[in-house]
Image (cartoon, rainbow, N blue to C red; front, side, top):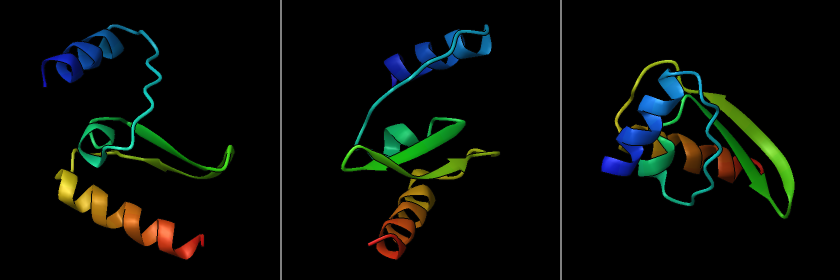
Length: 68
């Protein structure tokens, strides 16, 4: 939580942050999520409001299922 909070503060100050993760809880802290599979971009989401990470995970699973 502390690291994510620090990254968010830096981002709010204008710093671009690129973070690679498989953790939906971490990804849910982002404003934008780019999904990749086998080195290819398969989708993108802009997270306008801070939804609970369980909502983000459910959405991610639905999107992953539709791209298989």
